[in-house]
Image (cartoon, rainbow, N blue to C red; front, top):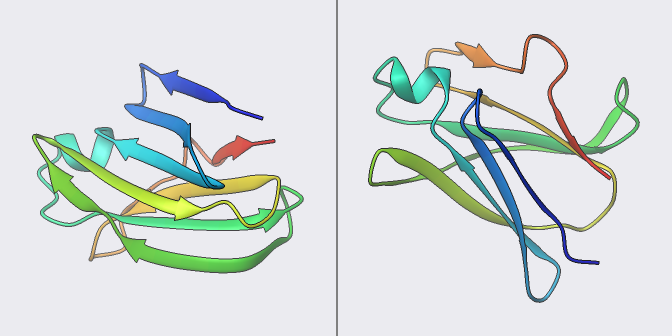
Length: 98
């Protein structure tokens, strides 16, 4: 099922692309603070107990960071970090796609 959302206040955009892939774009707190690198930290399962956890470097494109991942399971939970482990986790709520 196609989906998409944009959290304008936090600079997060999610869009479904063909073949079970999901593109996540980030221009939030870490990007605004001048981070040279941003990592997408994500996992699947319930909100308290993530499974299949990974952190991958996002690609920088015109002031935003972007990464396309395979959406292997649902729900998807994610947040962002920089190389110094400063986190943007939506005030502890993370972002969740069901």
